[in-house]
Amino acid sequence: MKILITGICGFVGSTLARALLDADRSTQLFGLDNFIRPGSESNRADLKTLGVKLFHGDLRNLSDLETLPAVDFVIDAAANPSVLAGVDGKSSSRQLVEHNLLGTLNMLEFCKQHGAGIVLLSTSRVYSIPPLADLSVQAIDGAYRPVVDSNLPIGLTATGVSEGFSTTAPVSLYGATKLASEALALEYGETFNLPVFINRCGVLAGAGQFGRPDQGIFAYWINSWKQQRPLKYIGFDGQGHQVRDCLHPRDLLPLLQKQFTAGSLPVDHRIINCAGGLKSSRSLRQLSTWCADRYGPQEVASEATPRPFDIPWMVLDSAKAQNIWNWEPQTRTEDILTEIADHADQNPDWLNLSAPL
Image (cartoon, rainbow, N blue to C red; front, side):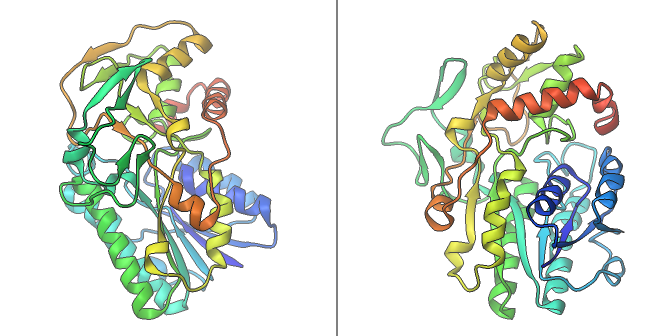
């Protein structure tokens, strides 16, 4: 099989590339990356050694796609993945739309040209912010948990947010670009008879992730703690009780392998959550406790003023993926955190490389 991974030199793209080749060395793997993210260059030589054919290009530029070979499937892992993109002063709203939506459109045209399928790696941030931000929570054992009562919004239970949860705006500019990309991909699939799959991921984490507080929070927190860099609990009660789930991207491999050969499926089966779920979830305070056990104590500052689009508890329910694909995550959160910390020990300058101040 011939597979193209966009954003291949990012953390998720490079991890999936290695996992695909480990599983089947006969796979012909191609990659496209624009290398604008700090740290992405660190993956180039390793991927070339593995036999990946790399192309330096930008999804926004159609001419950059003209030299790409025909493939059977595209894994679209290229995006600006920050919920603060377009509003944080580091990128414009137009750049965000061009990266995430126009880039998807250009890849869909590429797939149409070659009759290729596509897996769009989407996000939990397509879900509506107001009901999540207003969720009634209580702090238990250092982490928020939703108050389970009759007021829970449709699509949310104690086990997480399901695909039936509202995607009504506002979802952030970032979330809107991903939601629009999902709709466009599904329409291309139906119109041009292309296999299309939407995998909505929670927080992806593991060794080699670029440590940034707006994207790779687990890697950022552990690397910063090790280096005794200043850390701060931001928003809500200022105590770090906000919760996210955690998934290693290599755990997506069994799902991708099934999607590559699935053939025709109802549209509803093509949109699924892929996340570590409740058992993988951790609060920042719990993450701090883990870091203190490994590296020793450190004081964390507190600021109760929330950031834009922030929510207290985001855990995805992947029961649908289990029912349709018999998929569930395999890597324990403890093992993911240990892997990140081991990488931090071996690469003491990682934050300087991947998230320069």
